[in-house]
Image (cartoon, rainbow, N blue to C red):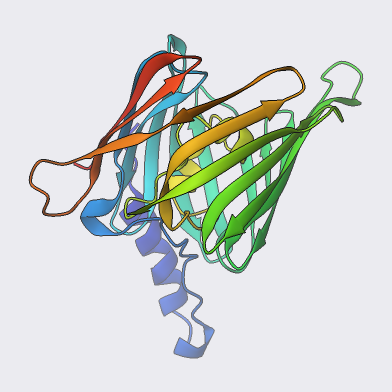
Length: 267
């Protein structure tokens, strides 16, 4: 199905143009984590990676209008997502994926998201995502089947700590050490979307609907969990060869002692 977002937007604009200028209400405008040629348009993972999604993202011109996500190692678990904007928020239409409904705040950030039986709530401070929780409903009995939540801590605009709890158990604490390199592409911390609360719908973050990005890139991650031994890994970045835009082309790290990469595209 071809997605005709400009036509949709034009129809909305036309409806408001019939009223006086005082009645016009603009479309919601989420603030994308990166601008222009620095926007990530594809993410591909290689090597020993945890459960992560590869993404292909389309913008037109300053909105994320479509995305295709595939769970790495499981091509059957993939879906397409189309996004339609109005003055009241965003409509998310997924094909072969979870049915989603989003409620946004005045800044264009999602505060409540349903994805099939999953219900997420997100909280923000100064535009940064600082807490989220998820409840999965039991399809047969209607009660709560499982839950997860996290608190996110920032320092000088950088995400430095995540305290994640699953099913009211002991927390998993992730400590992030920022580098001195600016995060001009608005990248999510690699392999941590499960803890950031957007696993399987990272495209909504890149569409500007889940808070602002960390100011600097992450150079080291340490994970402390009661369910296993603590581990840490360092992250290195390669920039595009031209050095004109300074876009990150490659992110290299180790997961459980084995090499992994995330490859980013911008065209």
